[in-house]
Length: 313
Ligand SMILES: *[C@@H]1O[C@H](CO)[C@@H](O)[C@H](O)[C@H]1NC(C)=O
Ligand SMILES: *[C@@H]1O[C@H](CO)[C@@H](O)[C@H](O)[C@H]1NC(C)=O
Image 1 (tube, rainbow, N blue to C red):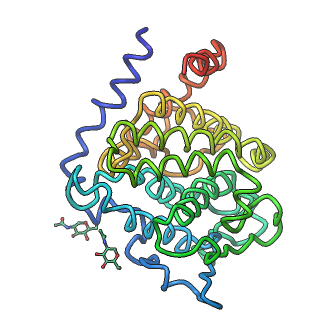
Image 2: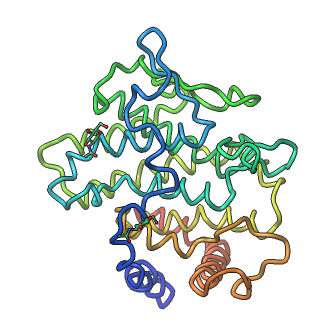
């Protein structure tokens, strides 16, 4: 099917031009990577427990930075500088959300995420809420799997100001609220720790955990779409489909590939009048990718492709 070939080209071919500049590592890392906590002791400690506020950008990014650091040794054989670590997709995606204004309060009722309060992550943000689970579940599951070198009860996350019940805050509460998801992340880490790990198999386990997390948790936050312009809402819905395709094609979520891919993502929230491929402040690549995502989403909802592909898995 021509459509799949086009997608395959997007994945492997069309983004390689950016690789040369991607060789400068500090330009490739997410925003404020070096400023975020690099070890657990950088967080507040009370009674031997680490207290983390995942509603502050630096603190959430720090969870990723520590996760990447603690898993680096398992990826050593695949390449230098931890760049082949398949967990890079998570912090890079979060960095894009931050840089493009997607973590700010879309209702505009608070200054959360804006100039006067730039590191605040808004619970009203659809992107921030879904990312919560793609940060906290992999992080707490890593703690639980013994990868972080601390006991499971030594981490406590702080809830956001109002929706206190939707977000699990500890290893044990995440296990009781999301047992299937925690199990999938655990499978990934058990594979990672085993002597017979292989790169392709790790990608399969990682994508299985990633897509399950996204699908299971996205249904709780549909009402958040009310806060966005229609093109942004459609992009958000389409993005879930895109992620499913990336998973089916086992997109290698290593540092340089994700960096190059993300150069094509919308650099700001989409507004009512935005029509790809004619958005004047977007690059050609960004216009092209957005058009492509819109087509993918449209074709997918018409043909029920995802359901079809799901049944083949
Ligand atoms: C690498 O990128 C960083 C951040 O963009 C920049 O400050 C630095 O000068 C670059 N280094 C080289 C060698 O290009
Ligand atoms: C992990 O963090 C420690 C402490 O900050 C640091 O010494 C070490 O070099 C880091 N390892 C990697 C692979 O980045």
